[in-house]
Image 1 (cartoon, helix red, strand yellow):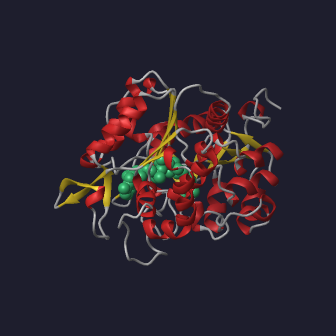
Image 2 (tube, rainbow, N blue to C red; image 1 turned 90 degrees about the horizontal axis):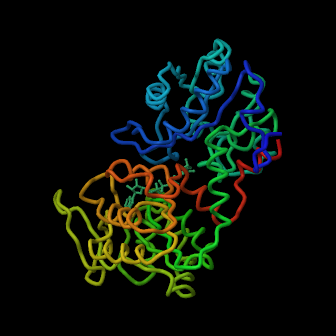
Length: 407
Ligand SMILES: Nc1ncnc2c1ncn2[C@@H]1O[C@H](COP(=O)(O)OP(=O)(O)OP(=O)(O)O)[C@@H](O)[C@H]1O
Ligand SMILES: O=C(O)[C@H](O)COP(=O)(O)O
């Protein structure tokens, strides 16, 4: 056992020259069908390089997007980005555990790296089930005999009880990769911190279901929730504003999350109204130009709002300047387009200038720091994990970490 406080084995405990199956989290923003480089590649490359240089045959598993969404694509492009970070070849096979995957695995030489296809293209990967059930899946049973060890480096996906995360540690000796180790230690330490002054959480992004659940659990630890993104719109709708779309709830990011969360959101608005700050203006695309509208003046549905308004951004920045600790999960707008980066960048700049304890998390959100010339050193912790980091703040165990501890 290593000296890690986490009580799981790490790469320091792994003998060299083995056949190693490694779970990374390369889930990335997709533009025009192609993955965009982000700090997940840079961070995971360190683990992969260390394993290759130790003479292992390194086979990588990762997921991309969710079935049915535009970001659900092959990992072929991810192999190229990872190869550029590693400065070594990363082979790719369009198969995860079938014959082609197994042939490619068996042909691998020491120090070579192979990426398998998107795990979520296998039926066995999703849905969430207990580790014992996942260990019994064909996916795990077919791949495991070709390996001596399993390494989980995907802290940022460890809140999901999926086959590639919780199944393998039950059937192979399992180790934490370097990203898993450092993210686990940093986020666990943050969870036990105590603050005397105002604690603020900036909540945005697209994964409203994840953040609303966590907001409910963190309600006693956080003084102010500043809302934006899809979560913010759901709260505005619960507050009586005519937001949303009359689309098929199964297909739409917004309406399906409204269906799943409106009771919880309405309950939180009733019970915790003083802690929740909602946007007073929103921005939208008006023939290619940013336009803003007061929330009080919104009178029709079916408009996509892509950022909080300028007045809201300034008001949120004022709250940040008066905070002792600020946690960010999810962007306040579609910051990838400069016109809709106002909310996210105004708030990040305020955090960077304020003498507060700060954490920015999320695979997409952390990308805004580099894109807009902010200095990572002005934040206490920039995590490549989003959902996992805020879950860790609540003290709830992460399925992928627990599975490693049991190994
Ligand atoms: N109003 C909005 N409409 C559509 N997309 C939005 C809106 N506001 C923010 N976003 C998008 O949210 C994304 C970031 O949030 P997301 O929920 O994906 O998670 P994250 O913080 O990166 O964490 P994780 O690692 O859990 O994915 C950005 O890419 C941004 O474009
Ligand atoms: O990007 C993330 O937060 C992780 O890769 C998990 O992705 P998921 O929210 O689609 O499970």
